[in-house]
Length: 391
Image (cartoon, rainbow, N blue to C red):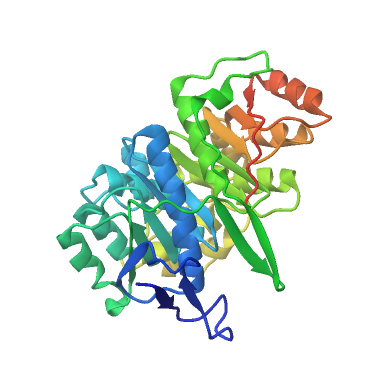
């Protein structure tokens, strides 16, 4: 296939849209089902690079959930606790390693992952397809599909679900270009490799980076490599738990991602796990109700005349004091930043969401303040000297 006509460009009024290779060669992917749009393909190619690099770096099956050209979540296959299976609504499914990776990737921020584009590092098996089949998603890209998985995915969205297969032998050209306002931009591809060698310079008093933290920091930085900048990423146990993307201020990234990490942790609070949902409440509505329940606007789901539509009995609110005490129990979180932290306020905010390990580029004139703030909380911080801006 030399060229593919798309549904439309970024918006429906941009009706003429296509993709092709400048050198006239065949496109490096196949459309197995559905008809992709412009943004679908941007999500697909960015997310596929992310999971491919995660697999190369960790040796584990990887998955990503993308929305608007940034990851809502990414994860590698690890053993999931019963609690995570419950909050991700997969406790009733048989999960392969790849399916577990996607459940965790989507579970990082289920609100943002609604209608996502999915990337898988490995051949899609029937367990992963079964999970995809019941989630609200626009499409998936993978290096291949089993026959049973493909037939299952072809029934999704009344047969219109977008299924793409990336050619595993494809290597992009070393120079990339794009046009903005009629002007062509050209640069070398960002082929920087994220390895454990990046974490050797640790200027903080605490220099202890266990193997699990190194893995999580690599996941954070690889995720940031394909996240719209400025960006900050929180990771725990092989999965992102908060991604802050596209903010003009780095501390706003840190706050945004930290708030998402707090929500991820609060979803595991016993009061949340025990919410008495009615059987007819769908998963997306449950996700939305949980987000509201653990926010300061909890009355929006607990008010008389409203809670009856969601619950079999009225739940007790999760108080501010209870939330603060629960969040204080979160530890062992790894945080990556796509560039240096200019002030210690980023560390202050990260610490409140259980961050014990940090990787950032370094090079700020206030590095000493950032290091001092890390030392204040016993945080181990590596300076990578690698910036990962992505636009």
